[in-house]
Image (cartoon, rainbow, N blue to C red):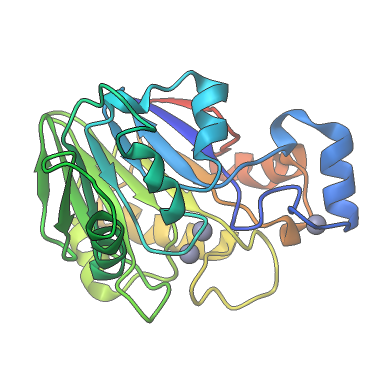
Amino acid sequence: MKVRILGTAAAEGWPGLFCGCETCKKARAAGGKNLRSRASLQIDDFYKIDFPPDTFYHVMKYGLDLSRLRYLFITHSHEDHFAKDEFEYILPGFAHNVEAPIRIYGNSAVIDALKQIKESSDAPEGLVELTEIKPFEPVKADYLTFTPIKAEHKYSEQAVNYLVQSESKTMLYASDTGRYSEAAIELLSRQKIDIAVIECTLGLLPWEPRTHMTFGAVLELRDMLVKSGAVDSNTQLVITHFSHNIGLLHEELEQIASPEDFTVAYDGIMLEV
Ligand SMILES: [Zn+2]
Ligand SMILES: [Zn+2]
Ligand SMILES: [Zn+2]
């Protein structure tokens, strides 16, 4: 799998869209890895997880060709992961020669919203295929399998993360996550994870990691998976999806993460899986 993390910020972006705090001022001045767009991940040319409002920017910045996108997996309907109004531009008149169908997977909130758009438009049959996913029920998507992992986030719907597996490799993309349930830990414990990309929205903030993860909660999850053997010294560990409220620039985050062997993701980082 050729994996690229397209965006590494929490909902408001980093610097925050309207934010004038000291961290955001420093991020604007420093630029580079301190400029973070909303979270999404691309695998090869054909697979993508989440569809943030920065998707058009990602297309331009990374030279993506979404007319070739075959599979789109959505984690939940928060706007930073699912900018549903942008789907209008898949319709005839806006998009030509789309390699249909684009298969879109998500929970009932996501699929219902997309069905409404589909029904209120003149989308031709077969342009998109919408499938509702259920936690822990794997979806075979050509040469990869995506298993939705139950997340503890956005309680009005079933948010999920994805375990992505090729014949020989396993990647966990855990955003947005919260502290996993026993059922989620149990399933993950049985895997051999080559790469784990985990949200660290709250960094070292002294907040309870209820629907988002602190770095402490990330380490707890890592330790549980080490104990079961799912994670070992060969596993690449990556943190992503940062809120500017953390107050640390990229290098400062690295100083905290590196001693624990975590890579701090930045926009555009390529991962070997
Ligand atoms: Zn988010
Ligand atoms: Zn700010
Ligand atoms: Zn969310």
